[in-house]
Length: 126
Image (tube, rainbow, N blue to C red; front, side):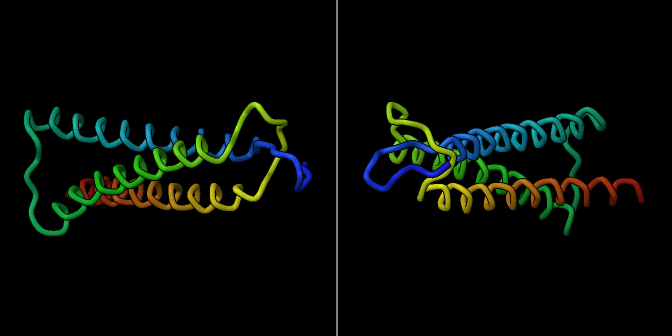
């Protein structure tokens, strides 16, 4: 499960966390684009709302961009820290950094989804 200290290894869990981070970034971006297009289709053009609704609509893409930045950082971190020519292990010391990055990606995706749910609930009451 864990490689010896004197041997170079690469971690399978680091690869899995990196791939999941990229998938979350793609899904978050696609969800925002679909919501935007659905909104445009409903009225023929984008709804213009005021107040808190407008702030929610502006914040949603920011979290998607932060998710994408975290995913790119995860890819770069994986490339620089994991040499796949070496033997594979389940975890290594870098797994902690990948796990922290993955938690941030989950947080950004959750904030993006939370904003969308709030918009849907407000639209249902209107």
